[in-house]
Length: 464
Image 1 (cartoon, rainbow, N blue to C red):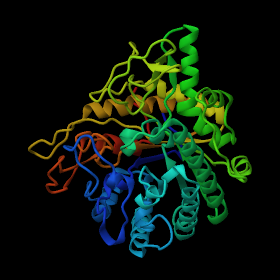
Image 2 (cartoon, helix red, strand yellow; image 1 turned 90 degrees about the vertical axis):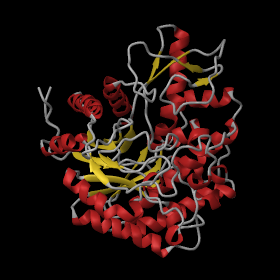
Image 3 (tube, rainbow, N blue to C red; image 1 turned 180 degrees about the vertical axis):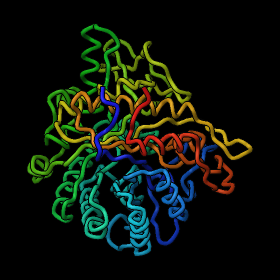
Image 4 (tube, rainbow, N blue to C red; image 1 turned 90 degrees about the horizontal axis):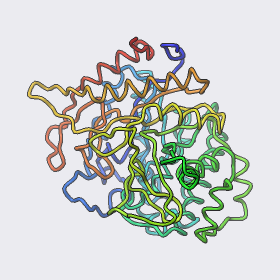
């Protein structure tokens, strides 16, 4: 196997707006569903201040430049630009993202911008959110504005972060459960909105490139029983292919259609939707990958645990279709996420074989309870091991013929996990705060910072 990545491979790191920026009502920003959603666990940090990236973006970008990244994936806060989701523009918010882009250009870091990352403006949620067609039109207006506003500074774009996880794990991500029929009407509206983003990016930005950004976890059958294989077939479609087939092929695939039929779900199409679906397509696929999933048949029994995971663990279940299964061949991290580096390679191969589009990894990383020592160090060898194993499989995927163009780790800096707070740290850069105490917000480079810095300098060259 080759031991070096292509010379133009993009090494990067990723964040999202609501998990890092804070300043949740500063300088004209409107509220989002992440600012207002109910929280089962009141002891964890929320997003009001987060890690104060809004005020410290210059320091953070300087550190990322020192790290050596070529691409920085971040999201815009829709409500910082349109406080009500549409209509009046907040010029302070618009200026802020111009300043971020200027700072990135100063260090020759390429921006990779996500249009929306779990933080729909609350004003639109109050009108029905993604359940109503008017939100699609508001998103279209928002996308048109930002492409025109920032298109000269940013050429690579992502649409809507992990719509599959947002719908499958609605309570953990959005703080509420969505009835099945409503959930898949939301699916349709989210995917049509994405199609408009493809269209507008290509129309408004010279040389603009855009892609979807789902969380993809290849689904294994628990055994060789035909019933378990059928369970994996359905969950692969519901979790993965329904979204990418819509994005990349402009279709509802047959397995997904059968799933909807069996659940008596009827999607309402607008007159123009068929043409929109089948006309506008992405330039690449952005893929968030953490692990694979294993399921067994759930036709005859369901042992439901309390709550639902973020689709990375075995407590997924839908009676009549699939039930999560503990894979005995894989280990887990401290947050119960299964570790499967080889699964990253096979997932990349499966996605590339299915869609034949370039792929960039936009999230892959290890959440852990890092400890800041008295001398200001964070020894995270466990993260280095995780990254080494997964990046090795990225290289193996390239060797196997996958057109993998980049790897942007989650996350650049510590941030607030959507449902596990700041204790679940992902970053190369430690932020001095805990769940309830903001402390100094000082930034400290972890051991993994130096490791990734060296890896980038060597263009991913692996130790023998």
